[in-house]
Length: 297
Ligand code: ATP
Image: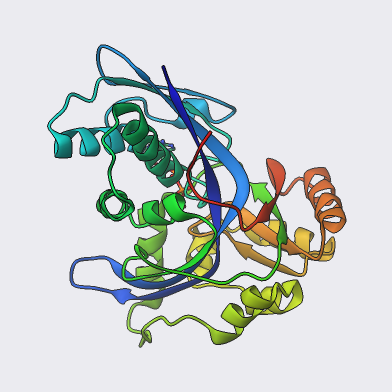
């Protein structure tokens, strides 16, 4: 017997970052949109905890107990006092270290899959609680759709979305570490007065109307200057996509994946082709959102 859970990637349509707190974390105002680019996590009973991974980026994924999917299984097993005897296989399609919450997706996926496999019957609230312990982006991978994350990003309020948004994602040649991008943010903003981050009302209105042009005008990412500082070549990727017809462009989360909001699926295909023909990215994917969060198949 095995259980497979499909989990989407996310793009941050707003990533508002506050000053570093005494605990080192930053307060965020984080508008997440789940997009149709998925990992699939399959769990099967085994003698002991084991992780395997397949897909184009598989060699970049750790297979020991630091893997976020393994950590989810361990966390649930520990709460229930049972052995985490499970083989977790990750069929990986979300870019690794790309700012699209791939590890968080696998974490939420493994949690839901183990809960179903072991019959532990955790409530939604308990699953969300475990997710929040495991990482700031993990609760959103569980719920999907669109949501505003506050605190470290883990306190979620669902957002209304009145339509489907079409995106192109350009994968970069190398990864960027999220902590390194936050450190660069701290360095670049040192001595500046940083206001508390707040959700942008025009962005929330654009989402609820399903208005791609208005959403494009409202896209913001406070981590973008830090990501561009660490990876200056991304500026050319953003320019190429804008020139090809994207309505709005931004670095996805902490990067280095770049995201291009398009008026429709045809334009997205054209923008993706232009980006692939340029030498400014490794590859591209098109995906629409919102889509549901972790789903048992
Ligand atoms: P975020 O958008 O949440 O900041 P990210 O998409 O930039 O994250 P991930 O793909 O989640 O980055 O991976 C970041 C690092 O986490 C990887 O470099 C890897 O070492 C580690 N990691 C642990 N578990 C996983 C996993 N299941 N999949 C991918 N990376 C993992």
